[in-house]
Image (cartoon, rainbow, N blue to C red; front, side, top):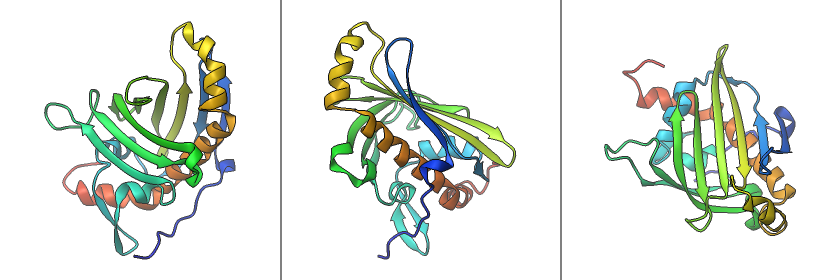
Length: 209
């Protein structure tokens, strides 16, 4: 199998940064470059259909691998809703390495809180138990595409977080780790334009965008 050819968006293609929220949690945020020919409906559908293969560049690949050919390892739905769909109440398993660096491994189960055409929120659990992070995505239709913003929040809403924050920052998620997440996310979001419209249109031939 030939490797996937892709052009990674540079970090400079998006606005990004880090801030400390009023409750002491740490927020890494990204305002991505405008996504052309990508609709909020496509994005909501994508996160509901992460499993499976895709024909890309004349070959068959795992679709999660196509989303980020270097860092992504595995993605599956550990739990779906009672009707078999993916949305609030479902759980996703994610395995990836930011920058292909073993120090920045992600191997979590994450609970979906929200998933619709306005955005996606899920809450990764460390060791499958402790909810130490929150992922917030916002989708806004704009022109011929979508404005896509991301936020990764480290910590929890409780006074105890301010006690544990120095330890978490030192041993688990320092600023270098945060910047590796920003770089990874800018690259994967930039990849949508190369494969998502074709995949969506192929699998939704009888529905409108």
